[in-house]
Image (cartoon, rainbow, N blue to C red; front, side):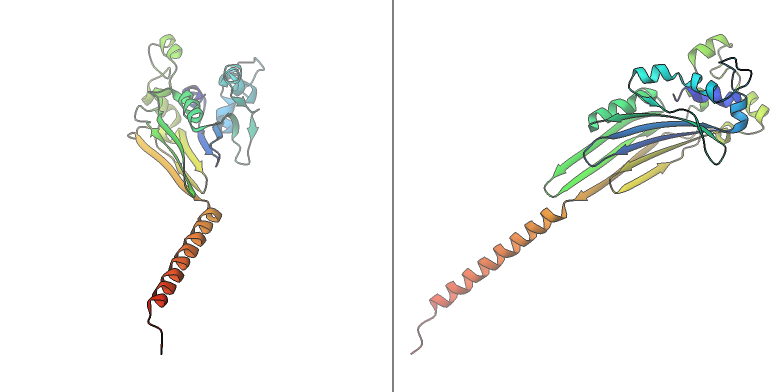
Length: 246
């Protein structure tokens, strides 16, 4: 679905992309990828369904929903928000941290723009530690999202056109035409990164620790009782050694 970026940026003015990773307390969760187009971009999409206009239906065709659904992704119908952006969202659940890494690796591949994923849920006495980490690498620019088939058909250009030509046509740098937000939510914490096209690879990590306070309080109470009992035994032992008063 991230490969859609190159094509839709060529079609219009602004494209927003969101990648959301949500890790629950039990180690399960979801990965969501969302692509949103403004109204001008939507109108400029290729008329894939031959309806006479570029619209949300064409966006659905470009996302290749059948391919995504075949691999376990749930794809929503296009929805328009209050800002006038039309969004398509693909969501895939995972049951364990290990499954989460597998799902995240499907986004761009092990050498892609989103890689080196680590998802952890470590339990120890009275606490559970959560961690999601990875790398966001947009140093290759939007060309890194280009389609090999498109490049082969259009003189080897990954986007079908030279980047400078695209920027001149829209009067904006590609970094302003396309935005990417990566949000990681773990129990008790949430972080968002918004790297720009062309930036160096950025390591990302969100982590938190949840404490089982009832267990810890019981342990503290037991320890306090133990200390009190020892103190009482010591006092009795000392009193037992005192000589009897005449």
